[in-house]
Length: 253
Image (tube, rainbow, N blue to C red):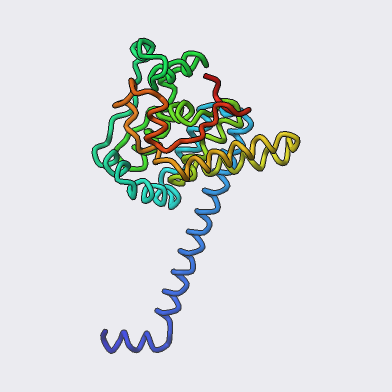
């Protein structure tokens, strides 16, 4: 620092400027976070208004791609050795062959998955195409493409209660941001608007959280390597001892 710098610093002007600059940056960061939070809250409301229409869910999911919440989710996913391996090799997106799956034994994961997709009239390629260059993009796409497998393995139906229950598993296991938001929104919305059926909704969410605590990370599984494996064997290996099937929010088999 020169003599001139010392002279200027002594009257406090550069320090005052630096402090004010830092304060302005902090205010801008808080404002950006607030805007992002408001946008995500609006998207959660839109999902409810559209009754879970897929494009509105995808908009909410994508709004979390570049956020601290997604980075925390990725840290938890990487902490699972199976998840870290999938992420490292960019395990390819799910591309189910439903016709082949229908030829598998009726007790297999593949047969039961095809039964769900065809029975509900779903498009197996319903998910929004995304690039998968970043870790956040890859994980988001992997979770989107395998969501209905979680329904089959955990035994939750596709009604709102079953959806909330199955989302609660991944929300608990890795803190996937959109699923955390939707699970909480489902509970609050049901409590406020349909209190007479809040019990079933809260039970389904609690069931999903319980499964998530006891089971291996569903998002980290290589389902494609075991389509022919019996569903009950999958559950045993995953640690799912009480699937939702026999309950009011369960998936009929």
